[in-house]
Amino acid sequence: MVIYEIICVFECVCIPVSLSLSPEVLEDTKEKRTLLLQAVKSLFPGRRFIVAYHAAEKKALAAPRKHSWPKSRGNFCHCTPYKENKDTMEAINVLSKFLRIKPNLISYMGTKDKRAITVQRIAVQKITAQRLFQLNTCLMNFKLGNFSYQKHPLKLGELQGNHFTVVIRNISGSNEQMELAMVSLRETGFINYYGMQRFRTTAVPTYQVASMCVAEMGYLVQCREEWARSQDPEAALRKLQVKRCVEGQLLRGLSSYGKNNIIAAFAVIPRNNRLMYIHSYQSDVWNNLVSRCIEEFGLKAVPGDLILRRGEADVSDYSIRDVVMPLPGFDVIYPTHTIGDGYKEMMEADNLDINNMRHKIRDYSLSGAYRKIITRPQEVSWEVISYDDLKIPLVHTDVEKLERKLPPVCRKEGKYRALRMEFSLPPSCYATMAICEVLKMDTSIKNQMQLNTVWLH
Image (cartoon, one colour):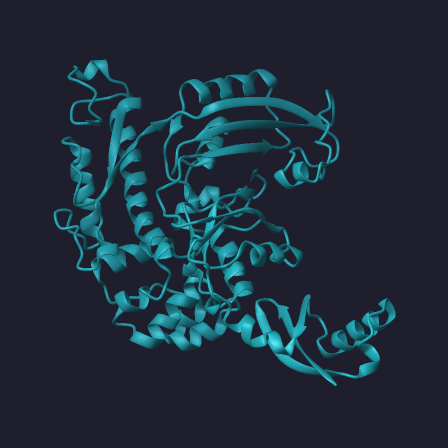
């Protein structure tokens, strides 16, 4: 009699059971494997994945990082995930669950949008390339490749930029209008607002959570109806279907440390996620003050603006493309015109002192930075294509290229037209803002959340 351990994975739930197999099914034939699969399915109806391994391997799989690690090998396996309809946080949570490691052992340089096909570099601590590669057999719309061992993790802020392929389907404007819009994007650029990815899409934006942490306010944002009703983190946690999300981590922290210790509760969230909340607050302030600046002074440089030094010159020698606005912090200066006062007013409304942005916890100290008001994409190209089938792909993905599939065929005429464009942006610049500029659309977060037909590749 041989004992196998069966792990059924369904909606992020692992259910270990023991299954005794009689000697008759140990001989490997297709018919007997079918009988085994049917027996397991009858035990676990509705399960999507079934992973089976010998019971003797259970101990090794449960603690894979305790295996010896060659001293000559770097502690971090860098690889490139390809993912469809998954943002970075969701992808990392999936990997951590399959690998049975904490999410903070997976590092990255920036976050990618959910509504897209994306690739990016990640680093996983002390997990072999072979083990990561084996996940490709069970990951859905998610592949891992291009492995290498390195001595260092990846950090937020190390990214050099991003390249985008964007398809906007069913356009109604003329080819001439598309041409003018794309030339304007290439030559003039767009207002460098932070996009909705910076603020997530939950009912409570990340910048509101961050302002509470920086100000050390003993208050928790609403999380689901249960929290609003009972203020009980354990009860609210029971209502969450996916408990490894950021909200679930925060609720667990509140259960452990109490509602009046938001700083300790917030520390339960992995550091990269915490920094995302902190940075989102700075981004919200920046977006608001840039809008106020453009409304008051227009798209031109004026006395009191901040310009990165490139020699002495009169204000008339500069354009709006030279102007920067500060992200609030202790190591920046502010415009000397009325927008400088706007920073102080906005932060005072959040119980923050603009002159005291240092915090006793280093992660919550805001040093600040400077960001250009206008940015221009590089490597801009575009074409208007025709198609008849609404479901036909209009781009050639990286996986399709690797599988040597033929690219989509562009037609000269068709029932519908689409604008396909490519461009590169510096780090922390958002393709959604470039798209809104081309389409002359509202750039507010509320409007962006309603855009469900634009996919970035």
